Amino acid sequence: DGGITQSPKYLFRKEGQNVTLSCEQNLNHDAMYWYRQDPGQGLRLIYYSQIVNDFQKGDIAEGYSVSREKKESFPLTVTSAQKNPTAFYLCASKSRLGGTQPDTQYFGPGTRLTVL
Amino acid sequence: AQSVTQPDIHITVSEGASLELRCNYSYGATPYLFWYVQSPGQGLQLLLKYFSGDTLVQGIKGFEAEFKRSQSSFNLRKPSVHWSDAAEYFCAVGAGDYKLSFGAGTTVTVRA
Image (cartoon, rainbow over all chains, first blue to last red; front, side, top):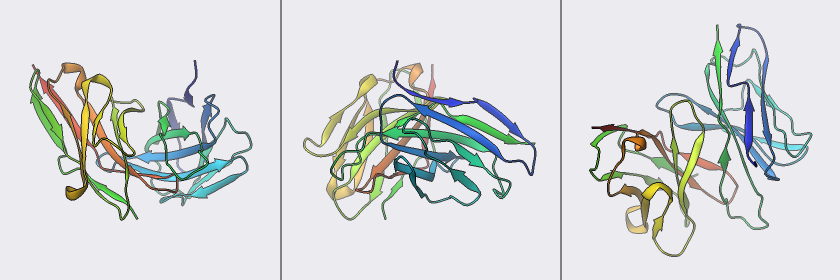
């Protein structure tokens, strides 16, 4: 089945530690996204990537880093510089059309990160 | 930059009653509009989208939405709510740069 997988589903981290969240898609989508979700704030964009080996900062990139070495993978690292990392993290992907239509983003099941 | 407002944080509706969720957007050009639904602890599922054409859009699970340019709105409706419709609903607007802006969400509670 085609889709987006995120692992792990739950993640616990001690303060001061870096942690990496996995996102894999087998939809052959070019673009991938990372969002952070906090109660009452909707989704906020952290980073996005439209092609392999290229990515852009979103609205709240500070304290996060990403890589895009393969089309199907877009891991997110939450660094110790992120002041309040406890949140629900969602990965999404979409096909990249030749024009400027945004088309549809499809979402993974999410990873809940808790800092102890 | 585009933005979305969902004025209702929480709505409670009886099973079998109709439901309408409000969404207002701010964008200078013709927007691309989406409604997503999220069950607790899950990812987002697309309900419907509007790119152009007919302003009344049909989606999955019996939902529909109407784009009203004059009111900058894209309200979601369902004629008869089922208990399984209890979830959080997000409206989103897209522009030509592949990014989406999301509203804060509306939580729907369905009472028996």
